Length: 502
Image (cartoon, rainbow, N blue to C red; front, top):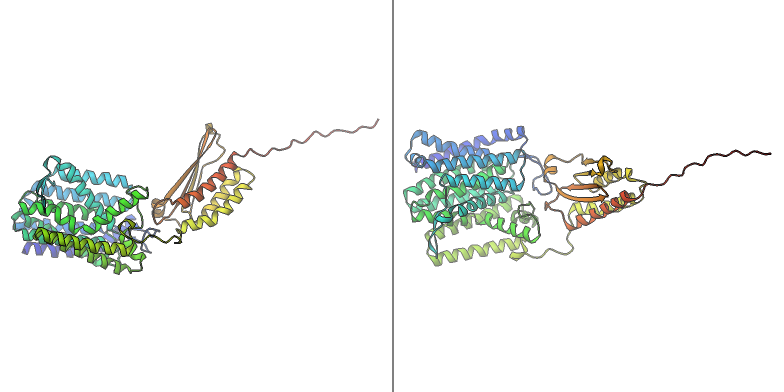
Protein backbone atom coordinates (compact mmCIF):
# COMPACT_ATOMS: atom_id res chain seq x y z
CA UNK A 1 0.00 0.00 0.00
CA UNK A 2 3.02 2.30 0.39
CA UNK A 3 3.52 2.26 -3.38
CA UNK A 4 -0.16 3.01 -3.96
CA UNK A 5 -0.09 5.91 -1.50
CA UNK A 6 3.04 7.24 -3.21
CA UNK A 7 1.31 7.05 -6.58
CA UNK A 8 -1.72 8.95 -5.22
CA UNK A 9 0.41 11.77 -3.84
CA UNK A 10 2.49 12.01 -7.02
CA UNK A 11 -0.65 12.02 -9.17
CA UNK A 12 -2.26 14.76 -7.09
CA UNK A 13 0.84 16.99 -7.16
CA UNK A 14 1.51 16.44 -10.87
CA UNK A 15 -2.02 17.22 -12.01
CA UNK A 16 -2.18 20.23 -9.67
CA UNK A 17 1.09 21.63 -11.02
CA UNK A 18 0.39 20.73 -14.65
CA UNK A 19 -3.07 22.33 -14.81
CA UNK A 20 -1.85 25.99 -14.95
CA UNK A 21 0.61 24.99 -17.70
CA UNK A 22 -2.18 23.32 -19.65
CA UNK A 23 -4.31 26.44 -19.15
CA UNK A 24 -1.69 28.54 -20.93
CA UNK A 25 -1.44 25.96 -23.70
CA UNK A 26 -5.22 25.99 -24.18
CA UNK A 27 -5.25 29.76 -24.71
CA UNK A 28 -2.35 29.44 -27.15
CA UNK A 29 -4.02 26.81 -29.36
CA UNK A 30 -7.49 28.33 -29.09
CA UNK A 31 -9.10 25.57 -27.00
CA UNK A 32 -11.39 28.01 -25.21
CA UNK A 33 -15.02 27.50 -24.20
CA UNK A 34 -16.96 30.61 -25.18
CA UNK A 35 -20.36 31.51 -23.69
CA UNK A 36 -23.36 30.34 -25.73
CA UNK A 37 -27.07 29.92 -25.04
CA UNK A 38 -26.50 26.31 -23.99
CA UNK A 39 -23.55 27.03 -21.67
CA UNK A 40 -23.90 28.02 -18.02
CA UNK A 41 -20.69 30.09 -17.79
CA UNK A 42 -20.53 33.72 -18.85
CA UNK A 43 -16.83 34.12 -19.65
CA UNK A 44 -14.23 32.42 -21.85
CA UNK A 45 -12.64 29.45 -20.05
CA UNK A 46 -9.95 27.11 -21.45
CA UNK A 47 -11.11 23.53 -21.89
CA UNK A 48 -8.01 21.37 -22.40
CA UNK A 49 -7.57 20.53 -18.72
CA UNK A 50 -7.89 16.80 -19.30
CA UNK A 51 -4.22 16.77 -20.34
CA UNK A 52 -3.28 17.45 -16.71
CA UNK A 53 -5.32 14.42 -15.60
CA UNK A 54 -3.63 12.28 -18.26
CA UNK A 55 -0.17 13.37 -17.07
CA UNK A 56 -1.11 12.98 -13.42
CA UNK A 57 -2.31 9.42 -14.03
CA UNK A 58 0.36 8.11 -16.41
CA UNK A 59 3.60 9.52 -15.02
CA UNK A 60 3.36 8.15 -11.43
CA UNK A 61 2.67 4.64 -12.75
CA UNK A 62 5.77 4.64 -14.93
CA UNK A 63 7.78 6.23 -12.08
CA UNK A 64 6.87 3.25 -9.89
CA UNK A 65 7.81 0.89 -12.71
CA UNK A 66 11.20 2.62 -12.98
CA UNK A 67 11.64 2.16 -9.22
CA UNK A 68 10.61 -1.51 -9.66
CA UNK A 69 8.14 -1.55 -6.79
CA UNK A 70 6.34 -4.86 -6.36
CA UNK A 71 2.85 -3.69 -7.30
CA UNK A 72 4.14 -1.71 -10.29
CA UNK A 73 6.01 -4.75 -11.56
CA UNK A 74 2.83 -6.79 -11.09
CA UNK A 75 0.92 -4.25 -13.19
CA UNK A 76 3.58 -3.89 -15.86
CA UNK A 77 3.96 -7.66 -16.21
CA UNK A 78 0.51 -7.78 -17.85
CA UNK A 79 2.06 -6.44 -21.04
CA UNK A 80 -0.95 -6.69 -23.32
CA UNK A 81 -3.38 -5.16 -20.83
CA UNK A 82 -0.95 -2.36 -20.02
CA UNK A 83 -0.58 -1.61 -23.73
CA UNK A 84 -4.36 -1.52 -24.12
CA UNK A 85 -4.73 0.83 -21.15
CA UNK A 86 -1.94 3.20 -22.17
CA UNK A 87 -2.46 3.21 -25.93
CA UNK A 88 -6.24 3.33 -25.63
CA UNK A 89 -6.10 6.07 -23.00
CA UNK A 90 -3.73 8.24 -25.02
CA UNK A 91 -5.76 7.64 -28.20
CA UNK A 92 -9.07 8.68 -26.64
CA UNK A 93 -7.38 11.69 -25.02
CA UNK A 94 -6.03 12.68 -28.46
CA UNK A 95 -9.55 12.44 -29.92
CA UNK A 96 -10.86 14.62 -27.11
CA UNK A 97 -8.05 17.15 -27.57
CA UNK A 98 -8.82 17.40 -31.29
CA UNK A 99 -12.47 18.02 -30.46
CA UNK A 100 -11.53 20.68 -27.87
CA UNK A 101 -9.31 22.51 -30.36
CA UNK A 102 -10.94 21.99 -33.76
CA UNK A 103 -14.38 20.53 -32.98
CA UNK A 104 -15.83 17.22 -34.16
CA UNK A 105 -19.27 16.07 -35.21
CA UNK A 106 -21.07 13.71 -32.85
CA UNK A 107 -21.02 10.80 -35.28
CA UNK A 108 -17.28 11.20 -35.86
CA UNK A 109 -16.66 11.16 -32.10
CA UNK A 110 -18.79 8.05 -31.77
CA UNK A 111 -16.83 6.33 -34.53
CA UNK A 112 -13.55 7.27 -32.84
CA UNK A 113 -14.81 5.88 -29.52
CA UNK A 114 -15.75 2.59 -31.19
CA UNK A 115 -12.31 2.35 -32.81
CA UNK A 116 -10.51 3.01 -29.50
CA UNK A 117 -12.75 0.48 -27.71
CA UNK A 118 -11.97 -2.06 -30.42
CA UNK A 119 -8.26 -1.39 -29.92
CA UNK A 120 -8.61 -1.97 -26.18
CA UNK A 121 -10.50 -5.20 -26.85
CA UNK A 122 -7.74 -6.38 -29.21
CA UNK A 123 -5.17 -5.84 -26.45
CA UNK A 124 -7.18 -8.01 -24.05
CA UNK A 125 -9.32 -5.52 -22.12
CA UNK A 126 -12.45 -7.59 -22.60
CA UNK A 127 -15.68 -8.23 -20.76
CA UNK A 128 -15.97 -12.03 -21.00
CA UNK A 129 -17.62 -13.13 -17.76
CA UNK A 130 -19.26 -11.62 -14.69
CA UNK A 131 -20.83 -12.77 -11.45
CA UNK A 132 -24.13 -11.02 -10.81
CA UNK A 133 -26.57 -11.17 -7.87
CA UNK A 134 -29.53 -13.48 -8.53
CA UNK A 135 -27.94 -14.70 -11.79
CA UNK A 136 -24.64 -16.18 -10.65
CA UNK A 137 -21.78 -16.67 -13.10
CA UNK A 138 -22.54 -15.34 -16.61
CA UNK A 139 -20.16 -15.88 -19.53
CA UNK A 140 -20.04 -13.55 -22.54
CA UNK A 141 -17.14 -15.32 -24.22
CA UNK A 142 -18.72 -15.93 -27.66
CA UNK A 143 -20.06 -12.37 -27.73
CA UNK A 144 -17.18 -10.66 -25.97
CA UNK A 145 -16.62 -8.05 -28.67
CA UNK A 146 -20.33 -7.17 -28.93
CA UNK A 147 -20.49 -6.67 -25.15
CA UNK A 148 -17.16 -4.91 -24.59
CA UNK A 149 -17.57 -2.18 -27.22
CA UNK A 150 -20.94 -0.90 -25.87
CA UNK A 151 -19.43 -1.12 -22.37
CA UNK A 152 -16.64 1.31 -23.27
CA UNK A 153 -18.78 3.59 -25.43
CA UNK A 154 -21.58 3.85 -22.85
CA UNK A 155 -19.30 4.78 -19.93
CA UNK A 156 -17.25 7.22 -22.05
CA UNK A 157 -20.40 9.03 -23.17
CA UNK A 158 -21.99 8.92 -19.72
CA UNK A 159 -19.06 10.81 -18.21
CA UNK A 160 -18.87 13.11 -21.23
CA UNK A 161 -22.55 14.12 -20.96
CA UNK A 162 -22.45 14.77 -17.20
CA UNK A 163 -19.60 17.25 -17.70
CA UNK A 164 -21.81 20.33 -17.63
CA UNK A 165 -20.96 22.10 -14.35
CA UNK A 166 -17.69 23.04 -12.70
CA UNK A 167 -16.18 19.97 -11.05
CA UNK A 168 -19.18 17.72 -11.69
CA UNK A 169 -17.63 15.10 -13.99
CA UNK A 170 -14.41 15.09 -11.95
CA UNK A 171 -16.32 14.55 -8.70
CA UNK A 172 -18.46 11.76 -10.14
CA UNK A 173 -15.31 10.10 -11.49
CA UNK A 174 -13.64 10.41 -8.08
CA UNK A 175 -16.48 8.58 -6.33
CA UNK A 176 -16.36 5.83 -8.97
CA UNK A 177 -12.61 5.45 -8.33
CA UNK A 178 -13.26 5.19 -4.58
CA UNK A 179 -15.83 2.44 -5.18
CA UNK A 180 -13.45 0.52 -7.45
CA UNK A 181 -10.61 0.85 -4.94
CA UNK A 182 -12.60 -0.31 -1.90
CA UNK A 183 -14.22 -3.28 -3.62
CA UNK A 184 -10.91 -4.36 -5.17
CA UNK A 185 -9.20 -4.11 -1.78
CA UNK A 186 -11.96 -6.08 -0.08
CA UNK A 187 -11.67 -8.75 -2.75
CA UNK A 188 -8.24 -9.66 -1.47
CA UNK A 189 -7.06 -11.34 -4.68
CA UNK A 190 -3.59 -10.47 -6.00
CA UNK A 191 -4.99 -9.33 -9.34
CA UNK A 192 -7.26 -6.85 -7.56
CA UNK A 193 -4.24 -5.02 -6.10
CA UNK A 194 -3.51 -3.74 -9.58
CA UNK A 195 -7.03 -2.29 -9.70
CA UNK A 196 -6.35 -0.63 -6.33
CA UNK A 197 -3.21 1.00 -7.74
CA UNK A 198 -4.90 2.24 -10.92
CA UNK A 199 -8.09 3.47 -9.23
CA UNK A 200 -6.18 5.28 -6.50
CA UNK A 201 -3.78 6.93 -8.96
CA UNK A 202 -6.66 8.13 -11.12
CA UNK A 203 -8.43 9.48 -8.02
CA UNK A 204 -5.29 11.41 -7.06
CA UNK A 205 -5.04 12.96 -10.52
CA UNK A 206 -8.72 13.98 -10.32
CA UNK A 207 -8.30 15.65 -6.91
CA UNK A 208 -5.28 17.62 -8.12
CA UNK A 209 -7.28 18.88 -11.07
CA UNK A 210 -10.32 19.70 -8.91
CA UNK A 211 -8.31 22.42 -7.13
CA UNK A 212 -8.60 24.37 -10.39
CA UNK A 213 -11.90 22.97 -11.67
CA UNK A 214 -14.28 23.36 -8.72
CA UNK A 215 -16.61 26.35 -8.94
CA UNK A 216 -15.61 28.96 -9.94
CA UNK A 217 -13.49 26.97 -12.38
CA UNK A 218 -10.45 28.47 -14.09
CA UNK A 219 -10.24 25.57 -16.56
CA UNK A 220 -12.48 22.76 -17.86
CA UNK A 221 -11.36 19.21 -18.48
CA UNK A 222 -13.06 19.31 -21.90
CA UNK A 223 -13.62 16.22 -23.98
CA UNK A 224 -9.94 15.43 -23.45
CA UNK A 225 -10.58 14.79 -19.79
CA UNK A 226 -14.14 13.49 -19.84
CA UNK A 227 -13.48 10.85 -22.51
CA UNK A 228 -10.15 9.84 -20.94
CA UNK A 229 -11.84 9.57 -17.55
CA UNK A 230 -14.70 7.50 -19.00
CA UNK A 231 -12.28 5.19 -20.82
CA UNK A 232 -10.24 4.59 -17.65
CA UNK A 233 -13.32 3.95 -15.52
CA UNK A 234 -14.39 1.35 -18.08
CA UNK A 235 -10.92 -0.20 -18.54
CA UNK A 236 -9.53 -0.38 -14.99
CA UNK A 237 -12.08 -2.92 -13.64
CA UNK A 238 -11.33 -5.23 -16.58
CA UNK A 239 -7.89 -5.94 -15.09
CA UNK A 240 -9.75 -8.10 -12.55
CA UNK A 241 -11.80 -10.09 -15.07
CA UNK A 242 -10.91 -13.72 -15.03
CA UNK A 243 -8.54 -13.48 -12.05
CA UNK A 244 -11.15 -14.65 -9.59
CA UNK A 245 -14.84 -14.68 -8.89
CA UNK A 246 -14.55 -11.42 -7.00
CA UNK A 247 -12.88 -9.76 -9.95
CA UNK A 248 -15.64 -10.70 -12.32
CA UNK A 249 -18.26 -9.20 -10.06
CA UNK A 250 -16.18 -6.04 -9.80
CA UNK A 251 -16.03 -5.71 -13.56
CA UNK A 252 -19.71 -4.85 -14.03
CA UNK A 253 -21.58 -4.23 -10.79
CA UNK A 254 -19.34 -1.59 -9.24
CA UNK A 255 -18.77 0.73 -12.25
CA UNK A 256 -22.42 0.54 -13.33
CA UNK A 257 -23.73 1.36 -9.87
CA UNK A 258 -21.05 3.89 -8.94
CA UNK A 259 -21.69 5.68 -12.25
CA UNK A 260 -25.44 5.38 -11.83
CA UNK A 261 -26.00 9.15 -11.99
CA UNK A 262 -24.27 9.84 -15.35
CA UNK A 263 -25.61 6.60 -16.83
CA UNK A 264 -29.16 7.54 -15.82
CA UNK A 265 -28.69 11.04 -17.21
CA UNK A 266 -27.37 9.63 -20.49
CA UNK A 267 -30.28 7.20 -20.91
CA UNK A 268 -32.88 9.84 -20.02
CA UNK A 269 -31.28 12.27 -22.52
CA UNK A 270 -31.46 9.66 -25.29
CA UNK A 271 -35.11 8.85 -24.48
CA UNK A 272 -35.98 12.55 -24.26
CA UNK A 273 -34.48 13.25 -27.68
CA UNK A 274 -36.10 10.18 -29.20
CA UNK A 275 -39.53 11.28 -27.96
CA UNK A 276 -38.90 14.79 -29.33
CA UNK A 277 -37.82 13.23 -32.66
CA UNK A 278 -34.42 14.83 -32.45
CA UNK A 279 -31.01 13.28 -33.18
CA UNK A 280 -29.96 11.06 -30.27
CA UNK A 281 -26.53 12.70 -30.00
CA UNK A 282 -27.71 16.30 -30.37
CA UNK A 283 -26.86 18.59 -27.49
CA UNK A 284 -29.44 20.32 -25.30
CA UNK A 285 -29.86 22.13 -22.03
CA UNK A 286 -32.18 19.65 -20.33
CA UNK A 287 -29.75 17.51 -18.32
CA UNK A 288 -30.42 17.08 -14.62
CA UNK A 289 -27.71 19.61 -13.65
CA UNK A 290 -29.27 22.22 -15.96
CA UNK A 291 -32.68 21.65 -14.40
CA UNK A 292 -31.29 22.06 -10.89
CA UNK A 293 -29.92 25.44 -11.95
CA UNK A 294 -33.28 26.36 -13.49
CA UNK A 295 -34.95 25.53 -10.18
CA UNK A 296 -32.90 28.24 -8.49
CA UNK A 297 -30.02 26.24 -7.01
CA UNK A 298 -26.63 27.91 -7.11
CA UNK A 299 -23.91 26.46 -9.31
CA UNK A 300 -22.03 25.06 -6.33
CA UNK A 301 -25.25 23.90 -4.65
CA UNK A 302 -26.31 21.91 -7.72
CA UNK A 303 -22.88 20.27 -7.88
CA UNK A 304 -23.01 19.33 -4.19
CA UNK A 305 -26.49 17.82 -4.61
CA UNK A 306 -25.21 15.64 -7.43
CA UNK A 307 -22.10 14.78 -5.40
CA UNK A 308 -24.47 13.49 -2.73
CA UNK A 309 -26.26 11.34 -5.30
CA UNK A 310 -22.93 9.99 -6.54
CA UNK A 311 -21.91 9.15 -2.98
CA UNK A 312 -25.22 7.34 -2.52
CA UNK A 313 -24.61 5.30 -5.67
CA UNK A 314 -21.10 4.50 -4.39
CA UNK A 315 -22.54 3.16 -1.14
CA UNK A 316 -25.03 1.05 -3.09
CA UNK A 317 -22.17 -0.33 -5.19
CA UNK A 318 -20.32 -1.36 -2.02
CA UNK A 319 -23.44 -2.95 -0.57
CA UNK A 320 -24.00 -4.83 -3.83
CA UNK A 321 -20.45 -6.18 -3.60
CA UNK A 322 -20.43 -7.32 0.03
CA UNK A 323 -24.12 -7.71 0.88
CA UNK A 324 -26.59 -10.55 0.52
CA UNK A 325 -29.33 -10.61 -2.07
CA UNK A 326 -32.04 -9.00 0.08
CA UNK A 327 -29.60 -6.29 1.24
CA UNK A 328 -28.76 -5.53 -2.36
CA UNK A 329 -32.45 -5.30 -3.19
CA UNK A 330 -33.12 -2.86 -0.33
CA UNK A 331 -30.09 -0.73 -1.32
CA UNK A 332 -31.17 -0.55 -4.95
CA UNK A 333 -34.76 0.28 -3.99
CA UNK A 334 -33.65 3.05 -1.62
CA UNK A 335 -31.25 4.53 -4.16
CA UNK A 336 -33.91 4.44 -6.86
CA UNK A 337 -36.37 6.22 -4.57
CA UNK A 338 -33.89 9.01 -3.80
CA UNK A 339 -33.05 9.39 -7.48
CA UNK A 340 -36.76 9.56 -8.35
CA UNK A 341 -37.32 12.28 -5.75
CA UNK A 342 -34.40 14.38 -7.03
CA UNK A 343 -35.43 13.99 -10.66
CA UNK A 344 -39.04 14.86 -9.85
CA UNK A 345 -37.97 17.92 -7.88
CA UNK A 346 -35.65 19.03 -10.67
CA UNK A 347 -38.31 18.42 -13.32
CA UNK A 348 -35.71 17.12 -15.74
CA UNK A 349 -37.83 14.43 -17.38
CA UNK A 350 -41.62 14.23 -17.48
CA UNK A 351 -41.68 10.45 -17.95
CA UNK A 352 -40.06 10.08 -14.52
CA UNK A 353 -42.73 12.08 -12.73
CA UNK A 354 -41.68 15.65 -13.35
CA UNK A 355 -44.42 18.24 -13.42
CA UNK A 356 -45.52 19.21 -16.91
CA UNK A 357 -44.35 22.58 -18.12
CA UNK A 358 -46.81 25.43 -17.75
CA UNK A 359 -48.68 26.23 -20.91
CA UNK A 360 -47.87 29.90 -20.66
CA UNK A 361 -44.14 29.57 -20.14
CA UNK A 362 -41.88 31.95 -21.99
CA UNK A 363 -40.78 31.05 -25.47
CA UNK A 364 -37.14 30.79 -26.37
CA UNK A 365 -35.48 34.20 -26.84
CA UNK A 366 -34.71 33.56 -30.51
CA UNK A 367 -38.36 32.71 -31.24
CA UNK A 368 -39.42 35.97 -29.60
CA UNK A 369 -36.92 37.89 -31.73
CA UNK A 370 -38.18 36.14 -34.88
CA UNK A 371 -41.79 36.92 -33.96
CA UNK A 372 -40.94 40.62 -33.73
CA UNK A 373 -38.81 40.72 -36.90
CA UNK A 374 -40.98 38.67 -39.29
CA UNK A 375 -43.88 41.17 -39.87
CA UNK A 376 -41.54 43.92 -41.05
CA UNK A 377 -39.60 41.51 -43.26
CA UNK A 378 -42.81 40.26 -44.89
CA UNK A 379 -43.97 43.81 -45.57
CA UNK A 380 -40.65 44.85 -47.10
CA UNK A 381 -40.41 41.73 -49.28
CA UNK A 382 -43.96 42.06 -50.58
CA UNK A 383 -43.45 45.74 -51.48
CA UNK A 384 -39.94 45.28 -52.92
CA UNK A 385 -39.58 46.48 -56.49
CA UNK A 386 -37.53 43.44 -57.56
CA UNK A 387 -35.29 40.50 -56.57
CA UNK A 388 -32.27 42.80 -56.30
CA UNK A 389 -33.82 44.25 -53.11
CA UNK A 390 -34.02 40.84 -51.42
CA UNK A 391 -30.50 40.88 -50.01
CA UNK A 392 -30.92 44.16 -48.15
CA UNK A 393 -34.24 43.00 -46.67
CA UNK A 394 -32.90 39.61 -45.52
CA UNK A 395 -29.73 41.13 -44.06
CA UNK A 396 -31.81 43.56 -41.99
CA UNK A 397 -34.16 40.73 -40.98
CA UNK A 398 -31.25 38.52 -39.83
CA UNK A 399 -29.91 41.32 -37.66
CA UNK A 400 -33.28 42.16 -36.10
CA UNK A 401 -34.01 38.46 -35.48
CA UNK A 402 -30.69 38.10 -33.62
CA UNK A 403 -29.46 35.36 -35.92
CA UNK A 404 -25.82 34.26 -35.79
CA UNK A 405 -25.42 33.85 -39.56
CA UNK A 406 -27.35 33.42 -42.79
CA UNK A 407 -26.37 32.06 -46.19
CA UNK A 408 -28.20 32.34 -49.49
CA UNK A 409 -26.92 30.15 -52.30
CA UNK A 410 -28.03 29.60 -55.88
CA UNK A 411 -27.21 26.82 -58.33
CA UNK A 412 -28.40 25.79 -61.77
CA UNK A 413 -29.93 27.78 -64.60
CA UNK A 414 -26.77 27.23 -66.68
CA UNK A 415 -24.89 30.01 -64.91
CA UNK A 416 -27.62 32.58 -65.46
CA UNK A 417 -29.06 32.46 -61.93
CA UNK A 418 -31.37 35.31 -60.97
CA UNK A 419 -30.13 35.17 -57.34
CA UNK A 420 -26.47 35.77 -56.52
CA UNK A 421 -25.02 33.80 -53.59
CA UNK A 422 -24.10 35.74 -50.46
CA UNK A 423 -23.69 35.26 -46.70
CA UNK A 424 -24.23 37.37 -43.60
CA UNK A 425 -22.59 36.92 -40.18
CA UNK A 426 -23.37 38.81 -37.01
CA UNK A 427 -20.52 41.09 -35.97
CA UNK A 428 -20.48 39.68 -32.42
CA UNK A 429 -20.71 35.99 -33.43
CA UNK A 430 -17.91 33.79 -32.08
CA UNK A 431 -16.43 30.76 -33.75
CA UNK A 432 -17.97 28.49 -31.13
CA UNK A 433 -21.41 30.01 -31.70
CA UNK A 434 -21.04 29.47 -35.44
CA UNK A 435 -19.92 25.87 -34.88
CA UNK A 436 -22.71 25.01 -32.42
CA UNK A 437 -25.50 27.06 -34.02
CA UNK A 438 -28.65 25.26 -35.15
CA UNK A 439 -29.48 25.49 -38.85
CA UNK A 440 -32.86 25.82 -40.54
CA UNK A 441 -32.49 25.23 -44.30
CA UNK A 442 -35.08 25.93 -47.00
CA UNK A 443 -35.00 25.54 -50.78
CA UNK A 444 -36.82 27.39 -53.54
CA UNK A 445 -37.13 25.86 -57.02
CA UNK A 446 -37.23 28.43 -59.81
CA UNK A 447 -37.38 26.44 -63.00
CA UNK A 448 -33.82 25.19 -63.50
CA UNK A 449 -32.49 27.25 -60.59
CA UNK A 450 -32.36 26.11 -56.95
CA UNK A 451 -32.09 28.78 -54.25
CA UNK A 452 -31.06 27.64 -50.76
CA UNK A 453 -31.57 29.75 -47.64
CA UNK A 454 -29.87 28.74 -44.36
CA UNK A 455 -30.59 30.56 -41.12
CA UNK A 456 -28.32 29.94 -38.10
CA UNK A 457 -28.87 30.92 -34.47
CA UNK A 458 -27.72 30.10 -30.97
CA UNK A 459 -30.23 27.80 -29.24
CA UNK A 460 -30.43 26.39 -25.73
CA UNK A 461 -31.88 23.14 -27.04
CA UNK A 462 -29.57 22.94 -30.08
CA UNK A 463 -32.59 22.16 -32.23
CA UNK A 464 -34.95 24.04 -34.53
CA UNK A 465 -38.23 24.55 -32.68
CA UNK A 466 -41.52 24.24 -34.61
CA UNK A 467 -42.32 27.90 -33.87
CA UNK A 468 -39.02 29.09 -35.33
CA UNK A 469 -39.41 26.88 -38.39
CA UNK A 470 -42.92 28.19 -39.03
CA UNK A 471 -41.88 31.84 -38.74
CA UNK A 472 -38.92 31.35 -41.07
CA UNK A 473 -41.12 29.48 -43.55
CA UNK A 474 -43.30 32.61 -43.82
CA UNK A 475 -40.24 34.65 -44.77
CA UNK A 476 -39.09 32.04 -47.29
CA UNK A 477 -42.54 31.82 -48.90
CA UNK A 478 -42.64 35.58 -49.27
CA UNK A 479 -39.15 35.58 -50.81
CA UNK A 480 -40.26 32.89 -53.25
CA UNK A 481 -43.20 34.99 -54.39
CA UNK A 482 -40.85 37.91 -54.98
CA UNK A 483 -38.46 35.77 -57.02
CA UNK A 484 -41.31 34.34 -59.11
CA UNK A 485 -42.77 37.75 -59.75
CA UNK A 486 -42.23 38.71 -63.39
CA UNK A 487 -39.94 41.67 -63.91
CA UNK A 488 -41.81 44.96 -64.35
CA UNK A 489 -42.50 45.90 -67.98
CA UNK A 490 -40.98 49.10 -69.23
CA UNK A 491 -42.83 51.22 -71.81
CA UNK A 492 -40.97 51.91 -75.02
CA UNK A 493 -41.10 55.62 -75.93
CA UNK A 494 -42.96 56.24 -79.19
CA UNK A 495 -41.20 57.92 -82.04
CA UNK A 496 -41.88 61.64 -82.15
CA UNK A 497 -43.84 62.69 -85.25
CA UNK A 498 -43.69 65.98 -87.09
CA UNK A 499 -46.70 68.08 -87.74
CA UNK A 500 -46.74 69.88 -91.11
CA UNK A 501 -49.25 72.44 -92.24
CA UNK A 502 -50.08 72.55 -95.88
